[in-house]
Amino acid sequence: MKQIIQKQVMMNKVLYALSPVILFSIFLFGWRVAAVLAVSNLTAFITEFLFIKNKPGKKVSMAVFVTGTLLGLTLPPTIPLWIAAVGSAVAVLFGKMVFGGFGMNIFNPAIVGRTFIYVSFPNQMTVNWLRPLAKFPGGFVKWMQPDLLTSATPISMADAGTKSVSDLNAFAGFISGSIGETSAILIILAAVYLVFTKTAKWQSMVSTLLSFIVFTLLFYRENPIPFIIYGGLLFGTVFMTTDPVSMPKEKTTVWIYGILIGFLTVFIRKYSLFREGFMFALLLANSFTPIIEYAVNKMKKKRG
Image (cartoon, rainbow, N blue to C red; front, side):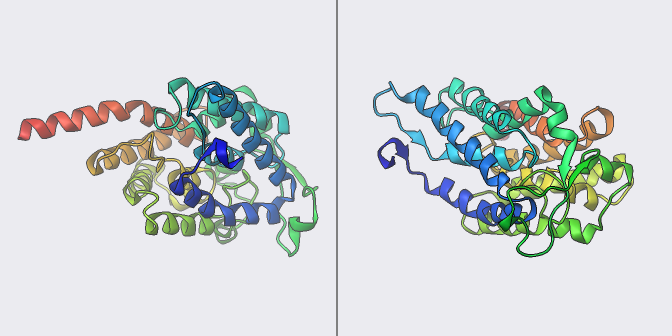
């Protein structure tokens, strides 16, 4: 197995940062979430392997496991395993391999897969949620938490002002939601680790969140914190806007990139049918990255 996988230290660090999130999600929802992650990762690996197997010298990138893990963590714990597999294949094939493989993709592969699932299977993504377990050993001794909730998405409930738990519990992670997006504290700790180890650029995280806060205050005139805690914004900001391949390379362009993501997230949430605006915002920002870099570089050349 080691002979066909390209070692990437940076990708290993991302997986290390995700480990506490994964363990906590198992505690909340049961071992079925591990099955979702396993299916997502296995499908991602097989898809990339089949794509490069006849190309001499090519290896499966370690990044494929980051893609599989990130995608799995953005899915509901009740997601059918076959849908996770389809989404993972789409993520790798259309999010990365069609562009030439690792280092060539313009979009974040995991968000490509997640968006495909969200648009293709909306009921499976937005209707059924699991009530999180709160007492030890929680999900460590269960296949799946049996208490199923049929309701709007957590972010829609926050948007409507009908939250079912306190913001403190939501910050800790004891809230229904996608597998890895519930615990703000663990995601923040992961962000600190990624920045400290120079695995991710803090500028993209800070610019995205500051932009989101400012435009939430402008559009909603409400406290922006619940909008950050509920839903996938914080998770995506830490683990997806920081993707070294699809994000801009220079500091100035990174700030513009983050501001654009924050603005688009709020705009889409406010004026579209999609309350989970981050994934569309990130895809649009990825599309604009080459234009942003070109414009900034041209301005710098004019200034001399």
